[in-house]
Length: 322
Image (tube, rainbow, N blue to C red; front, side, top):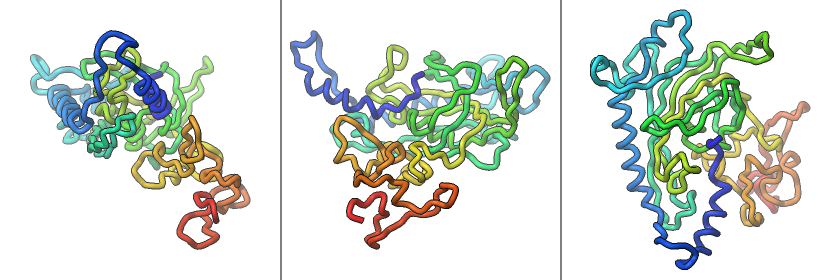
């Protein structure tokens, strides 16, 4: 599974980079590319794909018996010359297409050039789910996915059965993209013991490398600086997930409100050889008092509000001298 978050690898990358010498191995070390330049190139490549390819929207608009509800891409050419491109598919009845911009710093990939670039990811919703709400970047989601490069090379896929993970534990563009999908409503237990869902969200997310693996790539199947495509089926999700069990819904631990929980780490100065973002830390300010004891919970243990005992504007669970 290649969706795991890259943050844990940054320290290892820096150690290897700093220790490597010319005589360790032949060849020349190639420094990371500019995240600004790569962001622009990635966006051009993605938009080229979106404008020259279509998906099987007619099957989603006119569902026939036996249709497997899977998205398929093809090139607009020959017999398909008159098809509507993915880029223009938002004009089709029942189809939603959109884009979102996210600012990313090169430092998040262990690059020290202090560059910051705006990245655009695109999402295609072939069928919106029927749930009332959409998941947040802090929620646990049950889904199915398939990941590929723009040239169609498949690099990862979940099994046919649903899997569960937290949207902040995967590459950022995937997590932020899933936030636009509604899930299904009904869980079906099949005769063979497997489960399935009905009326779930179906679509795809197109993300630049700066919202994925950037200069590092992943294994032998995802090159550095590669834009990615993820087809997704969003079955269900745990609303207001509290990933670390500290009493605060994980989405409320996005202190800077940038849609990325992994760069919010109040007590990072106390951690050695480990990085625990607040949504994964039961004592967010490292004052020795569990976060659960520094917030207001109801009788059932549900979050009510933050406390600010000394009135300095910093909540107790983030304030070591509260």
